[in-house]
Length: 135
Image 1 (cartoon, rainbow, N blue to C red):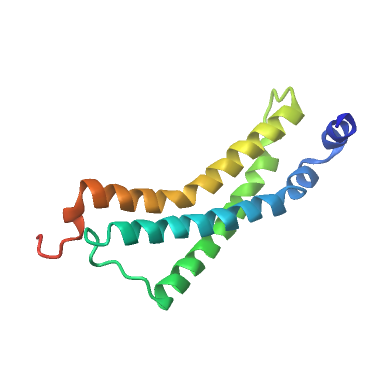
Image 2: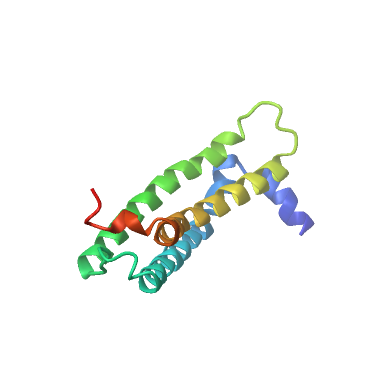
């Protein structure tokens, strides 16, 4: 463990962040799949409140392509981790790297769950939002 810490400190910013990119992307894929399952559960449980919602092959493919696009955007933002190491007054590089990675990872993994959470919120507290007879 001590050699890993000293080895991590010797890596360039780009090398350190690239060594963790695969783990980050696996997290994004798993989060996307779980968030889609949560979305399906919300639609199933609250189907009487969301009559306009439908799941078809087209909507699944459309949402999947949209998620891939946002994974690309997330990977572009991933470079901010390496860029953040250029901040002045950075005293503990190892601690900064681990904390920045953890914050970015968990934010990115949590973000896909915003859609099913918002959908459930509106289904429970504002079901009139989907009524088509409301002007």
